[in-house]
Image (cartoon, rainbow, N blue to C red):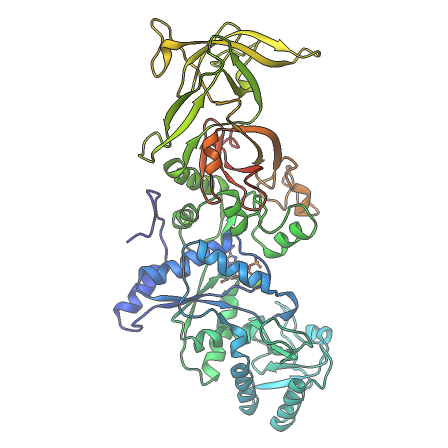
Length: 561
Ligand code: ATP
Ligand code: MG
């Protein structure tokens, strides 16, 4: 079965058969997955892979998926991120089961379980400073050493933990640790921290807590509380799995979820790290998290990428345990494929020069009916043809290169959906630049070829008086090197910021759009003929001052550069 929205190839997903087998065997009667973002930034294309996987598999197999904010770090988290994440998941086409959940909803239960571990002699309060604790921890090649506080009595530990919670101690002065094995080859099992002291305000729990549970002490138990059947995460958590299971073994949890890991998505020319994306925002390399050059879901949406094409992309890359770097052109392929099928055609002249059709009557307007799509029935649009029109400056050449099929002095070209015109004369300004063309049209050529002459070129145009002035923003890849951490020469750069593409945004003002584009709505996609795919900018476009974003070019031009 496929959830694909179109004809793209759906690659293998090694988790699907595992979940299917668990349903078949009766181990689980219903699949419950979760998507657990930390609200410390906006979601990016890597998260889209995890969303499509968790929500997609649950949907496909008749199960449900939870949205749970993994909000254990009050310092870096904000309500703005929570709102953006919810909007992005919905926009991608998924709905979580029940209310949005927060790990912080479980703080009281987690604390009770911490007390339980202390009572069982499986956790202790440690007074080593963070620096000392690091030294005691050992390394990958050396075992750690037991903390001198490891053998504290249960009653002393309970007393200290209660006072930690009551706010008696300063940040970093103590921590609650599990008592596992300081010699374990797996560093995660060397008496990991369960609670840290942090006198910080939390966006959900306010000032109720001054101790916060660690990621490891929170994640698996939250899965258990929600009776998640398959806890799917990325491979960097593989080494945490023994600890995940240790907690589920030691604690009286209501369910024992299983953790599975898959390879994260890496995309060339792109960063997929919230920390780096935040740096781009904070240091003003982009206009915000939703800048159309950002690899965030909200940036892609503003750029005009569609949810269906992102889902198709995620289907196409598949899910495995083998890492690798996916080519950005694959994502762009999915965007083009979707937009080619679904975007209305329109004309917009990006670098206009005026053309006066000298043999066309001044007061006359012919209203042409042009299809919105060449292959599908999407209705018609009206386009007025007048004596004065605009064409693109690059569609007229006095010294044409070989094979040039557009307008040349004395030559003919077809105006898309309209007549054939001939260039008779060029008007120049004082510096010799062409500022206007005088042309004549052949009245016998509307919708048909002129008798005995072959006109090869077709160019786009708009009427002069009845077109709409607009701004067009041409976006390109944000990084000019495939691995943004490395320069052109493949050597590591000091910072990924050095490889930001200086031409990733080109703003064109004074462009002219056909009048039907006055009806454009945020969320509509257009193919501006011969120019690419475009959409209205959801932030800056106003009815009296339209701004269009280029979503993607018509063809992949990066490979040919
Ligand atoms: P970042 O490194 O950007 O901060 P993260 O993994 O810390 O990402 P979380 O908010 O913790 O971000 O992620 C929520 C979920 O999304 C996790 O299950 C995580 O494994 C998954 N995820 C994050 N990045 C990727 C990626 N590049 N590919 C696939 N899944 C990802
Ligand atoms: Mg994280």
